[in-house]
Every structure is written in C-alpha cells, then in structure tokens.
Image (cartoon, rainbow, N blue to C red):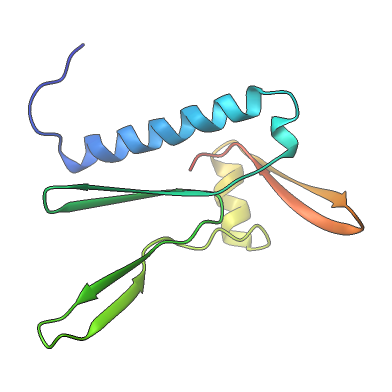
Length: 116
C-alpha cells in the first residue's frame, strides 16, 4: 500500500527500525556474518524533526547553540555495552543472544539479533 501525506513520529521510528533490522538480517545471512560485527548511527533530519537510530555500540552527540552563543553537547544514543546487565536483558528480551568468543587471546562478547 502506498502511503501519502506527512509521516508522524511513530511512522518515522518504525521505518528506521525496519531499515536497521533489514540490514542486520542481510548481514547475518552472509557466510561468516554472525561472527562479524559493526556499528552505525543514522540521523534523519526532516524539517525541524531529528530522528536518530543506532545499531551496535555506536555513539551520537548533538551540539546545540544557546541564545548566549554557548555550544552545549549532549549524548543522543545510549551506550550498549554487552557487559551491562541491562543491555544483556534487553538483547535477550528481544530474542537475541550474547556469546563469549576468544579472538587472538582476548575475550570478545558478541551480540546477535535482538533489534536495534
């Protein structure tokens, strides 16, 4: 079905989430894809609305100039650290899993699935 008219915030968020999920599914479907990883931040500015989506442990900051001319910088994406109980719970609740791999003598936690 073709959608016409302005998109509301819920529609924009759904489209960004779907796009991230599609990229994740394509990535995991490739041979060796589940053992690799990446991070991304997507910022979409439409009119005066800014939407930010992230995948992995990517970070986004936003700088805003106040009326006095000072620049205030704020973090716009939460940290997704795999050793955090909150993050582990979020991934598992979304159907993902976290495994511990050993790479070059280092332990590496890997996230698979579980949404963006």
